[in-house]
Image (tube, rainbow, N blue to C red; front, side, top):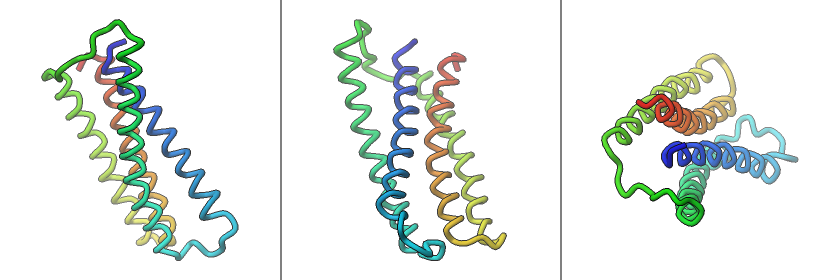
Amino acid sequence: MSFQERKSIVSLISSILIIIIYSAYVYFTDISGKINLADDLYFWAKIILIFFPVMIVAKILIHIAFYIVSHFTSDEKLPDFEDELDKLIEMKAARNSHYFFMLSFIFSISTIVMGFTPMAMFLCFALTISGACIINDISQIYLYKRGF
């Protein structure tokens, strides 16, 4: 398994774990015991706005730890640069995640039109963000396995 595949797998696992841990934290600290959060737009906007920096900082720290552990545990030399294939795979994976994000974003906005509560829109939007990260990682793993 190449370094890029291992990096993508670590990114996928970390994305899933961050989403699960953050969701559990939000549920147990903010949602449990409160009533009528269905119309509390401030609460749902705050949850999503805090999720962005939490996800970014956690992924940066996990990638730093991955590089350190890979350096000390593997005899394989870490790549010093990205070649054209790496950049192409990264762009295709980003394209796939952007397509997913845009379709899911349109769906999450349309929940309001269909008569659902704003809570449903924010939950769909949170799932959209999470799903786009996961689609990006899965696409990279698939494209590295396939060879392009």
